[in-house]
Length: 149
Image 1: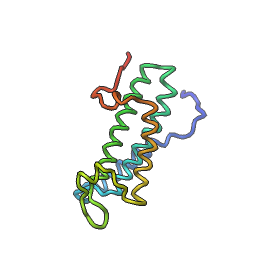
Image 2: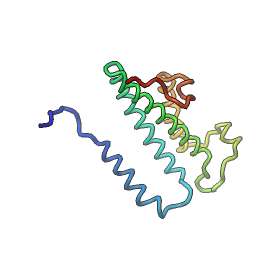
Image 3: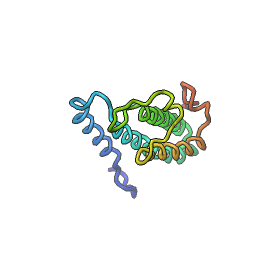
Image 4: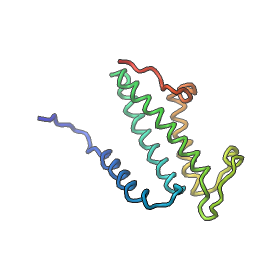
């Protein structure tokens, strides 16, 4: 008999199913290039998932260091993925004009105005958390750290 828990229902499987459903409906017959709106949505999803993993990591690490190490590594990889999505957004064709920003525009990180700054604001808020929880070396190493057994 399963133990009763007093936690809220688990909605993560529904989020996963929604992403799978979106992919199966929209990717095969959709545009060849990912839209900025979809990149923004994917970034928002990864940042939310990063926040969930961050909460689990911080609670688990003191109690079960080996599991916490794996969660910390997954959290780091999620941040790296979100960072790449942020960069992809700024390198993708602009809505309306279809203009592709040049490398200098992306390096200069020129603001594109609202509502596009929502993605950048979200990214910067998460970056502050990442800077508190990780080191620069953690983010640049191909191996995300010690994993205990």
